[in-house]
Amino acid sequence: MIEFLVMALFLAQPASSQAAVPAPAVAQAGRPAAPAPPKPGAPAAPAAKPSAPDAGTPAAPPPAPGSSLAPTGLRNPVDLSADHVTGDRNQAVLTGNVVVKHQTMDIRCEKMTGYYNATRQVTRVVCAGNVRAVDGDRQARGERADYDVPSGVLVVTGSPEARQGNTYLTGTKVRLVLGSERLEVENARILVDSPSTTAAPGTRKKAPAPKAPGTTP
Image 1 (cartoon, rainbow, N blue to C red):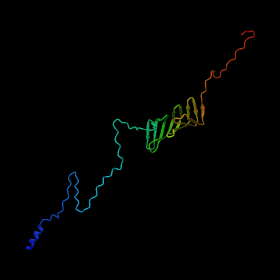
Image 2: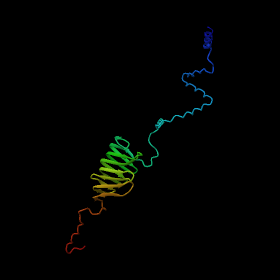
Image 3: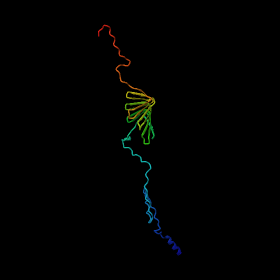
């Protein structure tokens, strides 16, 4: 009986404060739980690394109200207009009342295909259908035209015609260079004006009639 009472007293004693394990901290609503303090002699935990930024390019800010989206500071712009335009990153197709303006060159046609380079600059323009081109006092027309923008060379084919001042030319190919007065035509036929004359074409000056014998002047 004495041994039983001693055993019961030992089991009823409270646990030692050193053996007690602290309860984990409970996180409050909307706040993460505070980390437990490190034990003496334990290595410090590494600092948390900042989160990496998004890989995608941030979106451009919206334009200001009333501002235009047109680019500014273009050094050599090519102005294209038409009734309808479709395209992608490599080319654009314009149809209906097409107008191409580049410096002094003005090209008009029914359909045009414009080609871009990697930086979205127009490098070549191909026109088809009732092509008309004007650069200064030079004019050209035909059924097809190929315009190289960097060099400013325009080649018109398809029964082409050309005119510079009062000189009219026809041939198989007409070539104009932007801003130049030169005009080249292959297999050319030229019609030019000549200085006017006092006498009408096809007329001859009549000789005076002979005088009758015995008459005095």
